[in-house]
Amino acid sequence: MHTTTKPTFWQRSGVHNWFLKKEAGVTETSSMTPDLVYKYIIEKFKESVTELSFADRVIFYHEYIICFSPPDYNKFMDNNRGIFSLIIKESVKAFYTILQEHRQKGKKVTASANKWVFRFVSHPDYEKGDKSFIGKLLPGNNVQQKEENLRVTFIPRQTGIAQTFDIADEILKDFTFYSDGYYEIPWNEGLVLGDVNDPKVPRYLARLEATLPDKKFAGKKLEYLIKDDIITVAGIDEKKEQQGVFRIPSEWVSSPHLSIRFDKAADKFFVASFGEKTIVNENEVGNSTSDVPIWTELPMNSRIVLNGIVSINIFKV
Image: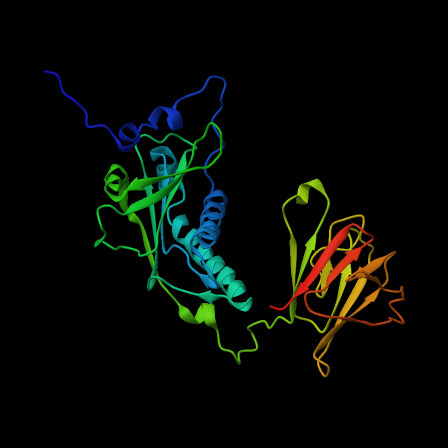
């Protein structure tokens, strides 16, 4: 008797061979680790903020469906049972930290649901190293229009390059859901908004944004939030992660190069230069020493250029 097998989502969508075919000479990726899963979730959260936010309103997914191959999923459950719950706790903690940073920049953090939902699932067509992500604004929302689509981000093991495409909600039945792969955490408004009088919530005075000419920083900017009344801007020779120090990893920046001071009484910023050359709004700032700094007013939205190469802008938070 001839029997037919119902085609899977991947076969129906026409991307089965493109995504999942074996390629000659391609070796499988390293095994899935908790750290890899954690970083993947944080990456998808940040992407959702970028894709969904508009104006000054921050919007993000509340439901995260993370899909693995059956072998990868079983490895987690057989050898590391309970690790998913720990990954989620750390992920949500990181979510709130990111949302607090947006709020401190004056953005409006908007929750589309009253909970976070995480589902770890597998798909029979996935092989070791394959993973994908599906995000939703409203977790567990069963009253969805049939024409509403979801977006899947899939990373094939052959290339490691993310591919994103829309899918209809009904294809979720092709994935295997597990009762022990479902986690739900209530939304905590207080962790985002905080108490305006709570001294634990950091208060930032301004934001610095640096642009470097180095190839590895092409298209990127370094950001520093000023929370101290006086800070130092230093170069690559400075030790990393020091309180009150904005370290710019460039040989074009001296250590120290600048000192930026906030005068509470005047409600203004001032800058003193110790480096070889400093230009503020096209005017050169005279050199001084850290022992006897010579202060020059630094208005908001000013542009500082160090040695004619590295550019720094100062903005209100």
